Image 1 (cartoon, rainbow, N blue to C red):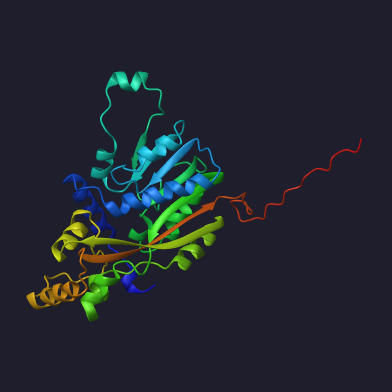
Image 2 (image 1 turned 45 degrees about the horizontal axis):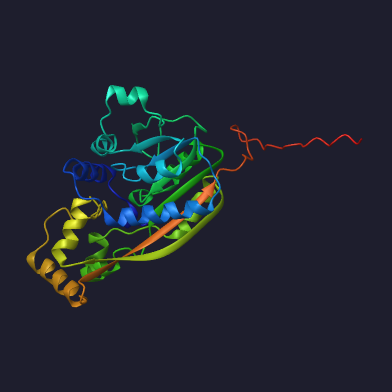
Length: 293
């Protein structure tokens, strides 16, 4: 895999932890993608008993999930502890005793090694988490493992055309300043390799308009979503480089501001009946004939 895909997981964890600790504003991109993911569930027949919100952040998707599936238990999972703390609002003893809603659980864990039992959840929901992994395959394999047979994975991620205007503004240095995102077709291949069946994916472009360059860079910083590539420059950029960046971005300004594109990949896939046993042997199922009357 190209080195531009390799991200620094410790840096990503620190940035999202800081963003949660300083009570950063809700990311409008993540909120809009969550709304679209929720709309997709209108056309999917599933009544999950237990939902895993994988890469839950500060838990802002929980309200919609609780509204759609009020009887399901919800498990929040994220690798940034401060985000989980914010995702779990304090509950009084009386509320715990008399609340009729299922108790919400939280676990601080890496998506590639979940401390959950095999086949313990009905729905894995993952909103813009996969794009923070150098290789999505281990996380997809774990999602497949923890899903029960017939369970559903619903996910979103960022595609290669994300931040294309910022990438173009950096010019020849774009590869070191804006890390790359994995193509939708590669995600689809990884889903199949992980064991999922009937994957369905589509792509859409969203545009966020910023009043100026500083607002764009501040938004990326506050939400923890700036460059996390291992090959990123470690030193400060010179004034000439930043001046050139600002000039190129200002050149594409429209009346509303500076428009930045995000390629959104959404998809879902199912955990079908296994075809192989844990030891690698093929599973053959026999259906008994009905006895003639």
